[in-house]
Picture (cartoon, rainbow, N blue to C red):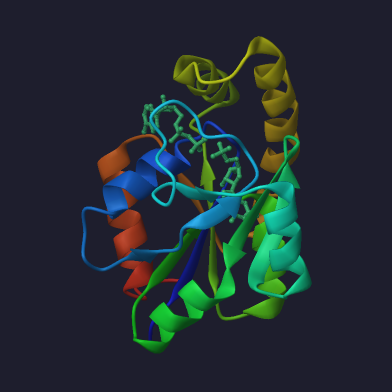
Length: 184
Ligand code: ADP
Ligand code: 5GP
């Protein structure tokens, strides 16, 4: 059975890094989210995200074409439903890398989805990673840290918690979960 796998967790924990690594494998497929956030340096439209205007985003909500969507740190993010459904229909495992509110929506609409919380080895390490990324202003970082604290509190709503200490170990665990070696 193809699986819908949701990766969530606090900003800076390493979700994008994990996704980049998973993309090197053939057993996972991905959805490209839409966002109203401006592209960061080096982000190409249609690769990490489809960058859209507020109006375009609103139209997708009105057309009911998003599987889930949420506002995060002042910007909107959403998963186009058609991409995901098409891939699942073709028997492919689909990975969504989304924030917590979106994960909650997927839980409701797709109860069979596997919800995985990526957790940092410690709070100090999370702060270090968030600051080390250097892509946000200091004001933005403070805002993201406050959000991260809230996000950490949601981890017991998830089916699995995977600690992102060593990347290779995390990938092994996710491959094993996708293969159905544990859990629901
Ligand atoms: P997120 O997508 O969750 O916001 P990123 O993937 O952008 O997080 O990672 C935030 C920072 O943490 C990056 O600088 C990344 O290189 C680093 N990082 C990710 N995974 C690890 C890991 N396992 N060990 C050490 N640093 C990591
Ligand atoms: P960033 O701006 O750092 O790329 O992403 C900010 C947050 O938005 C991250 O937690 C990321 O997982 C989340 N995100 C990315 N795409 C989506 C999406 O389609 N839906 C939801 N709900 N969150 C998303």
